[in-house]
Image 1 (cartoon, helix red, strand yellow):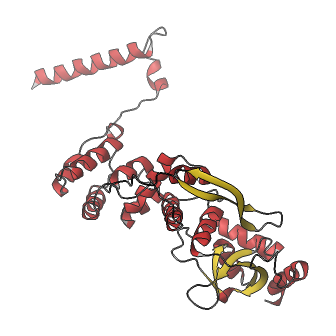
Image 2 (spheres, one colour):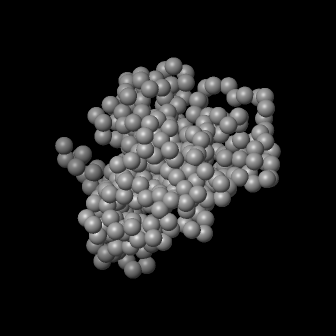
Length: 336
């Protein structure tokens, strides 16, 4: 254990145990893990998978190279992690008890923006994680006095007043020391909030709205989206169903062991909006045979090629097979 904890001691020697930085209310310190709390309503899941195991091994071998980012815990003692939940989990797995942390006095909105932006740098992000992350970021912008045209409410009216917002340009990213940082520039941006968010996170406004729609899904259906059992576009259509309808749909999916196609999901949405959706209708829609569920008989070509003239095309072969099967069928009927 002493050897593992010495990794942080080495980091202290390199960086200094605690140092104020340019009067920005920031310090760098080595903090016990037990004093670090997870970000409230953190939308990104930390799972004990291969990636976390590899991170744990890296930390065991090379120590924590990039400090975590945290702020004083607004709800009590200790600190709230803004960026570095996976590093904390990997350290716990490795038996390391303290880690280097950059402590900054973020307000709630700044903390949410930094938390979301730092996690969006990851390669493998689940649809549910993006959905709630985008929603949290958008709500943070709204609390900063910014209007939004994007909403997870499918029926609520959009605001028509104050169509643009004026904010200082914020830039987030890793600095030269490998620390996640948010800087505020002098440039004033006058832009619709949906356009501003889209530019900041690199998604189209339409795609952001679709992701936020997923936050209307019940957990069981959202889990199926994360697991790849329900496609993203289908999930967006299903998000228009109310909560009771979604629970009924999940029951039908579970009993019938099938999921709706995009066209079926669209029909379910339209039936819900018309007030005509119940479990019987769901059974009828999902009970329809989908093109990809039709039984197909496949025969390897080499098994049949020996019976056809060499100049026969595939179309001619199929026509002859169909003709022979029909003849066989007609003979059986006549013998009855």
